[in-house]
Every structure is written in C-alpha cells, then in structure tokens.
Amino acid sequence: MGMRRDRPPEELELILWTIINSIQDAISVVDEHGIGILFNKAYCRLTGLKDTDVLNKPAEVDIAEGESVHMKVLETGQAIKGVPMKVGPYKRNVLVSCAPLFVRGELKGSVGIIHDVSEIRALMDELHRTRQKVRQLESKYTFEDIIGESPALKQAINLAKVAAATPANVLLRGECGTGKELFAHAIHEASQRCEKPFIRVNCSALPETLLESELFGYTEGAFTGARRRGKKGLFEEASGGTIFLDEIGSMDVSLQAKILRVLQEGEIVRIGEAKAIPVDVRVIAATNADLEALILAGRFRKDLYYRLNVLPIVVPPLRERREDVPLLAQYYLDRMGQDYNRLGVSISPAAQATLQEYDWPGNVRELKNVVARALINLKRDETVVEVRHLMISLGNGAGPQEQNSCGYQGGTLAQLHERWEKTLLADVLQATGGNKTEAARKLGISIRNLYNKLEKYGLK
Image 1 (tube, rainbow, N blue to C red):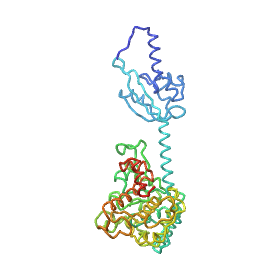
Image 2 (cartoon, rainbow, N blue to C red):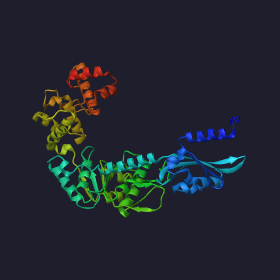
Image 3 (cartoon, rainbow, N blue to C red):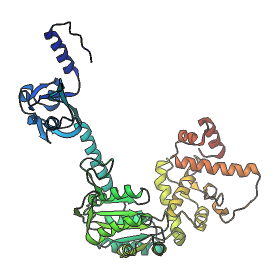
Image 4 (cartoon, helix red, strand yellow):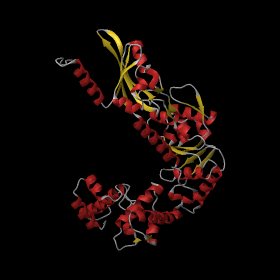
C-alpha cells in the first residue's frame, strides 16, 4: 500500500477523513480496549446515533440486540464476517463484519463495517406473511361449487359433508382430474376449522428432503443453505386448520413414518431439533394410486393407511356420471366465456350426446380443456358449440367419434395433416391462454404465419 507523504500531516488527515466519510457503508473503529475512536457519517445515519453517543464509549453502546463483534475480534485477533444484529435506538437490522487492526504487529483495535439489511429483512418478512396469507386463502371452494346431479357424485358429496362435521382424517380417492382437491376445499370450508388456515401440499412435486423441510421446518444450521433463525414447517402454519396432502401415495416410506407421528401424537419435530412441537391439524389426504397394492409392495405403510382411511371418500370418474357431462360443459362455457370474451355460448344436443359418449380418461380436467378448445374453434358469429367444434386429442383419435380407432379412417395425407394441424394449433392456444405471440414462439413460426393458419382453420 502506498500513500504520498509530501503534504502536511493536517492536510493528509483531512483527506483521509473526507475519504472515510464518502464511503456509503457505515464504519466504526474501537481501540484495543474496545473504546470507540472513529465513526463515519454513514454510521451515524444508519444507527441514528450522534458521534458523541459513541466516541470514547464502550463498543456495546450501539447494540440493541446481539453481542459485540468488536470485542470478539479483540479477544481472538481473528476477523468475523456477516454477523446479524440490531443497532441504535431504531433497532436497525444490520450485518456486521469486523477485522483486527494491527499496527507494527500489535493489536491496536478493531475495524467494523456495518451493512444495512433492514429493508431486505422487511421485504423478506412481508414475503413470508404474503405466502402465509396465500396459503390460507387457498380454500376457496364450497360444496356448491361441485357441479353434478348424478347419484355417484351425490353419494360422495354426502359422505364429504359428514366428514366435514367431524374432526376425523379423510382420505380422498379417485382418478386424476376427478376433483379431489375441490372436495378437500369444500370439506375444510364446511368444518369448524374454516376460519383457520387451509394449506395444500403436493407430495409428488418436491423431492423427499425438500418436502420434509417444508412440512416440518428446520432449525438454524440444520443443513447447508438453511435460513438463519430456522423456518416454520407447513404443519405448524396449518395448526388449528387443515393440511391437504395431495398425491400422498408418492411419498417416501421414511417420511410416511413422520406423518404417522403427527397423526398419532399430534406433534412434529423440526429438522435439526430434538424438541417436539405440538400441532392441532386436521389431515385430508388424496391419492389416485392403488394404496392396497403399494402396501403389498412395501411402498406404503399399513399403519398410516389405517390412520388416514378413517373416512374414505371415492370421487367418481366422469364416465361413471355421464349425466353430469352436459352440466359441467355448460358451466365451463359460461365461466371461460368471460375470459375468451365469448359470453352467452350454449352447446347443441348433438354435441352434448357426443361428449356423453366419450369415456374421459382425463376426467373433468380433460373436459375443461375440450370446452376451451371449442370456444377457440367458434367463429365470431357462432354462439352454439356443435360437434365440429369438439376436438378431443389423447393420441387415440382426432375427435370423439373416432376415439375407438387407432388406424386409418380415410382421407388424403393433406386432409389428415390439416386435421392434425388444426388440433395442434388449438392445443397451443389453450396452453398459452390465447396469447398468439407466445403460441408462435412455442411453435417456432412467425406471428404472420400463425395468423394465416388460424384464419385458414377458422380459429380466430
């Protein structure tokens, strides 16, 4: 390090002091006894203290919460980085890094740099509160939102209403897309816990280690990357309310044992901690898996199965309640018609019959997609969905009337290609929510080319 010394000492001191005060980070310096000897303007702005409050005062005088890093450095002679604490009368959240000050080999003090993280901390806290509110607001459906009049559906609804009036655990079973989550929302809303949180967890969406930390939380230092001060788990956040464990059949056996402890003991243990934390949570689980087969294969615990299976509710597939298909189709036409700016659209009797003949392997979720494609296929002057507007593509046919055939059904190659292209365009527009620019990007074609194709097939 070099510095010119051909100037008077007073001028050099003034230059150095000006430099120190021009630095944006707060600086504090104490001597070998921990007594304050230098503080820049940024330090005073950050802490809300005057230089007279800290000069010639012990290092701890500015600390609102935490231990003096200066004193630890003076005790050890080693630098310390990134220690969180609160300073000053306003208890600003800061990170403090200190280094020993050696002069000719002797420890003469400690130099601290204080970074203001209060705004970041406030934003993180606000984000955490917002995430909690979003989870709590997730319960947005009631039994009135379950559409259908079929005996199979009515039986499931009646069982769910009985379940809602009890504190018992519930196991929702049914194929993908039948509406198991809708039932979970409705059960919570009809229960005595409706004013408390409803938290949904997709057990198949997260790897085992991450799912465990999300469910049970962790303490500070429990693993690499763990938050300071640890983190509450979703079972704690749901305490007093309901936790919905979707796709529980995909959960690892070791994690199932911890879920069983919650159900049996009413307590959880955070990762990295030995102390049990009591929780009052109602568990609703859902699966489309054959749990009995998983038990025989050793992939699902029998004791957990019996704990969850107190009130089993089977949500029927759409092919077992075909009379509900027209009701659901019209419901989605009305609801999505607002998004697609196609209000007042109805469905013809022939189209209704065609929909009822289809087996719906994707259930209600698939029906919703077919209705969306039908809305896209409607021309501007059309207000009734006809059979020609229906496009059901699951790789086993181009339309409902062809679903039972896997082979050639007639037509030239050009005609077959056009049929495939029209279906593909409708699918991409559905996936992009009608955003044509995004659809063109996904297909790798120009927006002009996309518009030409949409006009050709009447998909505008």
